[in-house]
Length: 306
Image 1 (cartoon, rainbow, N blue to C red):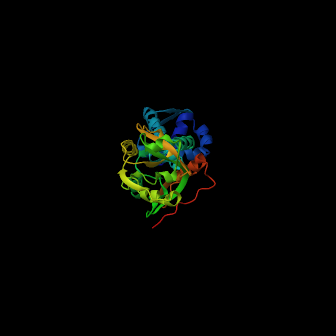
Image 2: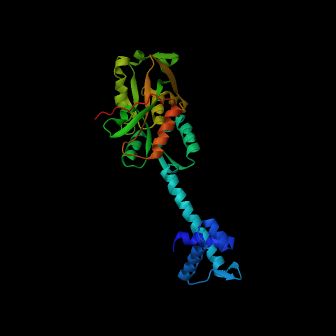
Image 3: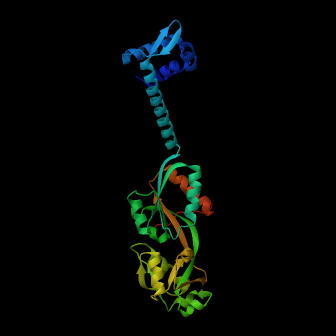
């Protein structure tokens, strides 16, 4: 039994006329009559009564019509589903992110993607940078909002810079520098610093050292933290200052003040993915990120140091 046999039967059952069904199917009537007879022979039951030019459904025919319609509908749905998948309109996209850094760009890009691909499942995972790099290596996520360019050092991942953020200095409220509305970078030379741990945010130490030429000194890191909230607690406790992206100011920071730097210091924010990931959905989402971030014309691959 083939799908065309079911289509032929459904057409005759709905039209209750071989001639009208033949027109609908663009078949010769004798051919259609033969197809229905072959179907009945294969099933071993009579589906249609043909008396005095009238066609009616038998009880078996009425039951089989319900099943035939269901099979045809499932077939059509399966065909459309695979076509949508080929066009990139269905499937899933797994995305890792650092919530406290990408709280503005991420919702905007996801909303734009959802409008274009409403049938795609978006799976979001709040992860540290290190967790994202591991998940990318194991193909558990398609894209990671990893943050620092330096985190991609010695990896085989593809990366792009999506934004530059101002860096602020976080100081204990009791610090004498906290009284100033703006801090000269050189004034931080005598301070100890709290930094992100390499265990959670690989490349953090490398980034801190990269500002040395601009600052005129190498930041001395006294304490490391795995999470943003822990870093702010360490600062509030007087263990050191911290250089943080401006988005961190939105976190609760009792006992901590944020101040702008002179001259300004910038930090890049990057996304990363596997170079061998050929997902059309990934490519489409990257295009949306570029448009939403306003950097469509100047995206450059992140250099990878091996």
